[in-house]
Amino acid sequence: MAEEQDFQETKDRVWAELENVIDPELGVDIVNLGLVYEVDLDADKNATITMTLTSMGCPLAGMIQSEIKNALSGLQEVNEIGEVEANIVWDPPWTKDKMSRYAKIALGVAD
Image (cartoon, rainbow, N blue to C red; front, side, top):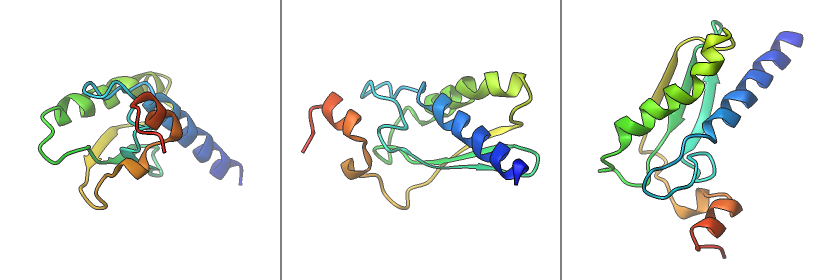
């Protein structure tokens, strides 16, 4: 039970660090944009980030993946997580509905 709680706390810290990764085109973080679908930790606490991009031909994919690794490097330095992998998927496709209320207001698309 304690180990499960530790894993959840670590996942929560990964999510929090991912909020520091800003989409360079939109100026809002990738979590609030709804681009991050899942954070998985394996038994060795290697982190796999499953995410998408706003468009399939996004030229900034490599840059965003690099920024994810940079954002999580602090957790790696204190051995909270191991390796980091950012997997980009296209299913389900991203839509504006995945954005948080904060992101919608920031981008002027609030309901």
